[in-house]
Amino acid sequence: PPRSHRGHKSSIRTVNKALKSMKGQLTSTAASMLPPEESCRKISDILSALSSNNSSKGVEAIRLLVKSNNSKDVAFLRGSSAELGVIPIEPIENKVDTQCIVARCIWDSHWREELCVVYPKGHHLAFYAPLTKKPSLVVSFEEIIGVRKCNPLAGTNPLPGFHLLSIDTAWRCHYLAFAEETEIDSFFSRLNDAMFRSSESKAKKSKAQGWENYQMSLETALTGLGIHSKWTPVTTGKKSKQKKPRRILNGRRMAFDADFIAKPGNGDTLDEVAKYVENLVRIALSFSPDALTASQPSVMEFLDEVSRLRLIPLHEIDLNTKEAFCIFVNVYHCLLQHALLIAVDGLPNKRSVVPFKRCSCYEIGGDVFSLSDLECYVIRGKTSRATHPKPPFVDGAKKSRTFLQYSLGATDHRINFVLNNGDLAYPQAVPIFQSQVLEEQIETCSSFFLKSQVKIDKKKRTVFLPKVCDVYRNDFGMGDGLVCLSQCIKYLNDSDQLAIAALLNDGIGSISVKFRPSCEQFHANLVLLS
Image 1 (cartoon, rainbow, N blue to C red):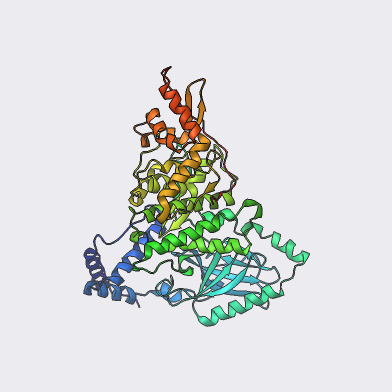
Image 2: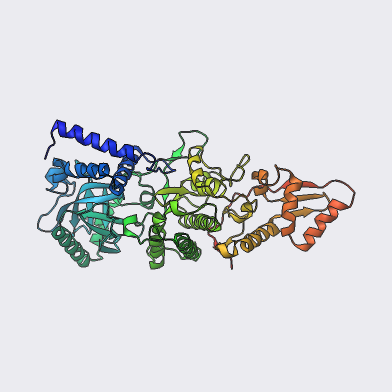
């Protein structure tokens, strides 16, 4: 019912008092969202804080907010196409086709009321946004792997009181919300019946081809292009206008449809997250581009498993521990492998490596991290900045410096030999880092990398070090070449160590330290270092 003007002012005063009492308790993400999503997140955080606030002001504020329903709340998911102002371009045959009003999940925090029509003769279902004629999305029966009812865990349902259903495809699960249980049961039954009766005829294929433009492409599934985007685009060039949307590679399932990695408040959170990430990168490194299709059960299992990264409680991770270092380096290598395998624009090259590293992302614990965010601001957060980086090395975007709030405590120069950049100068094999044997693994990686990259020219009295030592020169004693060489020499073969020692001590002349040229070609995938 509508509120009186006086009651409205009273509600605002009560909510403002509750918000003042929570000052400093609200958190923000490192990545910036687009205005509608940012507003939704802030309101969600305020409501969560109010609901967890045991003060009388918080309880009273929640009571007033719940009481203030309006006509739009009552009309939500009620009526038919007429109420939504939808006139489908493809006519609806009432005796054959099934239509209903649903809320379709665009993102976990964004649900849009739409008309859903199942066309058995056309072998597809279509979704129409309000006041439209053309569908916003078409899903063919061929794409659908399964239809299931969702039962989110307590406290995770984004629409409490509504009934959720998922239409699973290879790259994305399409979530629908229904007002009544009878409606979801009827839709579930009719859709499964239509799919069962669907035949693999030529007529089906010719009909489906007419709706290909409305089907969700891989690019749309990853970025949200053509529908709504959650995160602001990132800069991919020298000019601020050169921007591209983030590609969320772990977006097949929403957070409410995934299993918890660690229960909130559990004392073993760090260990459980570390074990989960170790298993995740092990699965990722088992794939190769020659034997990879999205419809494979193992691939979909991996996409579902990587979706659980959204549930990692970042605020419970001590960023100065070995476990945190292992978690984020393993996640970085998992994301790098994932991005290389999908290769939406082909393997990275000199021109495409910047958008590849700044746009390939995972959503983790309510925030979003790209390859460059993880490398430059999290893992290298407290080491030196890159000096004039050029492809294949990519610096983090300037507006992403907010990710420094997640920077690890590590300042070891050997990070340069541990983080795999993905180009051919680095080994194809990477280990799964574990805190118990971390020092031994770092030593092994350093030796494995430097033995293949350091070259000696005895005639010219020159030692060539890997390019990464030049880009991050300030990690090695203020950029001095000989200091850098002294920190690398112990990881070389005995014969190379003796050769360099001879050049330094023969008294003939000085030794020159130079850096190898950059490699602009990338591996097709990474493999597990045994």
